[in-house]
Length: 195
Image 1: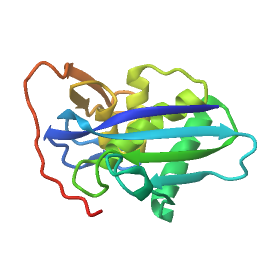
Image 2: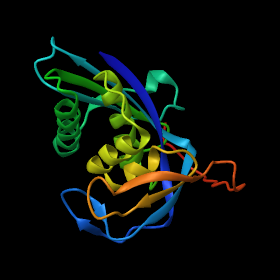
Image 3: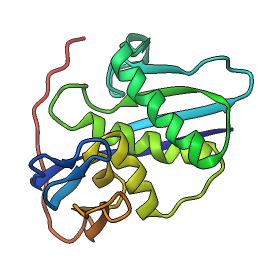
């Protein structure tokens, strides 16, 4: 089965300052962030019994670059391993054994300071469970996204978001504090992308 999801990067107003649990990525403190509608990740997950191994492809240029200059490349081994470990969580929860092909692309340059791991793991979580045919609540999706990248849980709810630190995996999750229209805030950036 195949599904595509889009998730925004987020910027923290109140950051979390470390983890109370490294494995479960439970934060030491609550945090508050704003989702960035113009900086997002689009991820497609395709589970199939025909695949013999997981494959992860990343678009090497942002989406606003004309398509002939875009190319999809294999991710480096460390990044790909984190994604495959997250796919394993999806497979375990949904009970499917199939390998997957993952294609992911950002609307912003990777490493530009816009939390691409947050939007990336949020999109991977939503697309992964949809492709696996398992419908989770928003709270459950934030918990699973957090396991891939802590701040990814804040990229699932809309608008201004709180990541509640909690004291267990089930109590450390994110929820929308206010919709995106609550405050008229904008973040402007000048970004030059070599062509």
